Structures are given as C-alpha cells and as structure tokens.
Image 1: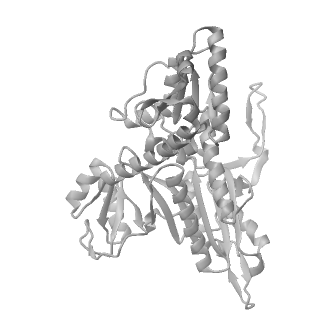
Image 2: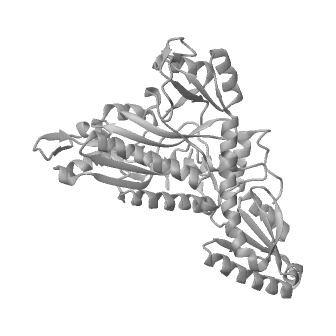
Image 3: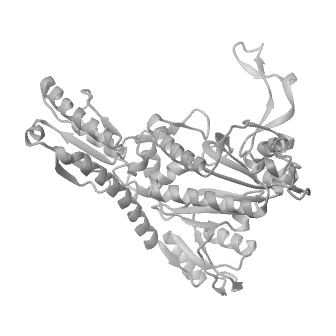
Length: 491
C-alpha cells in the first residue's frame, strides 16, 4: 500500500484529505469545488441513505422529486431566504451554445438564446416546493403534506473540502405543510430526534440537540433546531438541521387553506436536511493514524476474509473453507467480502482493509484448517484472536455489536474530556484555543455573538434543549444571561 498517511497530531487537515483519497472514498473532480464520490465512499453513503429513508418512512413521510432549477422570481419571493443564499447561487442565463465560426470546434454562448427569466440552480428547494404546494393545498383535508426528496444541491462555495464543504453535494431535504403551528413545531422536533438517533445508534457519533441563535438560523426560518457533534481536532460540526418555518413561505407563495371552521389561514411549514457532510463527520469521529474506522452498521462490508496459502492447491482448499464460513455468517445477517484475488499478497490486503476501516478481518491458512481455528482482527482496537471455526458466527455477531458500542463510548468519552465551562472571558479564550465545546453565559444579543466570533473565531453552536434556566452574567458584556450556550470553533 506504500507510504502511510500523515498523522493527526502532525497535520489534522492533511490527515483528513489524504485519508479520504487513499481510502477510496472521494477525489477532486475537473469541476472546481466538486467531488467524485468513489464506489467505496458511495457504498457508505448508500447505507446512510437507506437507514434514514427507512426512518423517514416509518414516521409517515414519502419521497418525491422537484426540479433542479428555480426561476429567479420564485427564489426571490421569500426575502430572507433569497438574501441568505444569494452569494452562494449559481445562475443559468442562456439555454444553448453555438459553434464559434472563427475557431472551429470551439463553442460559445449564443447571445440570442438568453433566457427570458434566469434560473437559479437550487441551493435549497423551499421556493420551488412551496410554489408547487400552492396547487396541492385548498383545505385542511389536504394536510399534512409530509414529503422528502433525495437530491443534489449547488452552493458556490469559495473554500471547499471533500465531503465537508463542496460546491455540489448530495442530501435529503424534507418539506412539510401543516394546519397548525403546534403540529409544524412537533414535526420539526420529531425529525431532530430521528437525526440524533441515526447519528448515535448508526454512526456511533454522540450529538447535542439544540436550537441555533438568530445569527446562525436558517434563512427564512422562525427557529432552527440542530444536532452538533465534536470532531477529534476539537472543532464542532453541524450534523443536521430541522427548521420551523412558521408561515413565512406560505405567505411568500400565498399558500392558504380552509380550516374546519370555514376560515382561511396560511399553512404552517417545516424543512429539514442532512447531507454528504455526514461522511466527513463519520471519518473524523472514529478514524485513526492507520486509516478509516467504520462502525459496523454503516460499513459496506462488515467482515473481510483473506486466505493465506502457497500454491494453487492450497488456495483452493482455503477458499473453499472460507466460502463455507461466509455462507454461515451471511445467514446471520453479516455482510462479508471474501478477497480471493491472487494478484495481491495477504500483507498488502491487510494494509488495504485496515486503511478502509473494515470492522473485522478474518485470516485463514492451512495450519488454521488443521487446528479448526481462524484469526480474527478487530479494526477498532487492533486486537487479534484465534476462534474456533464452529463458534465463529456467534462470536462475529457479538464482536460487531461490541465494536459498534465501543466506538460510541469512545466518542462520548472524548467529548466529555473536551467539554468545559468558562466563567470569565479570559478563561473562555484559553479554552477555545485548546478546542472543544465551551459552555458559557451569553447575553442573547447578536452584537455580542459577532464580537466573540471576530475575536476568537468561535460561534454559538447551539442553545442546548436540555439546558436548565440559570441566571448569570454574559462572559463578554457582563449583561444578564438566562442560561449557558455552547461555543466552539466549527467546520
């Protein structure tokens, strides 16, 4: 496999970039700021997608699809939303090219083919969806609408990073319509719980549930709920958001319904999403200097089998034995890859699967067949043990559960270790420099939040939902504070 990757302690950013490319997850493309998600990386995203899709459907949602292009006038209808995304928009102005007569084979924009109305390439879909909902909703009988779409979006980012921030990325976005305010708020919170459950139970990544400050709120939302995670370098990562939109979009697109009492009212709304940014979160929560570490529930294959042999006859015998074990494991619901390629040596394969984060590796040779044992190596702890071949299916299922739990516990311990409380601004600045979540009193003003960000690069990640009301003084202004919020430097 050649030279190892840069260590996290040496250069965390370089470690991350090298790992994404060396583990065959993604690479930069010919389009500035856009990525190619490679098959192994996409297989992990598919696992995430499948599980989330199942959870959305279990909570009553259905999938649909809406256009990639949004007419500029529709995009501008909700002012805060348009203003919030304006600087990130890609815009289509012409609808065809023509051959350049002076330079054969070269194409140029046909100036006669300018669009009557420019089209925004969707950075988010509220505008096109609420314009559509206007035709779907007349009465309370048409509500609620619980729709999700899996799509790509474009946000013309200047500084990009594979998975974490790219000009085009994949995501899901839910857009729901309700008859009452309380129903829309309940929906927003319900989805936040879905995201938190997915992050913790499947990604093995502990999260804090909270609401955003007004400064950090989604453009066009009344309230933005979020899940925040802590990465190994002490920076926070917003892993998912769920927005209570009030009647803002219904008013912008004139979406009214007739209630049971015969009165007309504007529809209440929510929108929510997670993206391929979760791939970055997964990588940075568990991986180490040897490469990727994947939780079993999201690994493209949970077990890899590597035969050890000399010559074709031994190879056939070992592969036959491993094939039997593979069938037994698969009957227990374990996903297995048997790597019987004769083009690479076992040592090369061991290094490759270590780098790719496969939870368990099984190796078997002729001596193991004689003894009736196999060698099993765990990726999370790097422990190796020999197990009886007949007891293997039960051992493997138990080990996979143990790895999943261990990764989560380890991440929780790390977060606790890197969470502190600041009582003074000097203490706050010291803690922020060393990284992690810092709980501190804030006076609730955007002005104070901006000043703290300007001076320390720390932002309010969230006002935790489980935060108790606690009178105090803002660490920056000394003004009264109703409770502590979580600050951190963030991705």
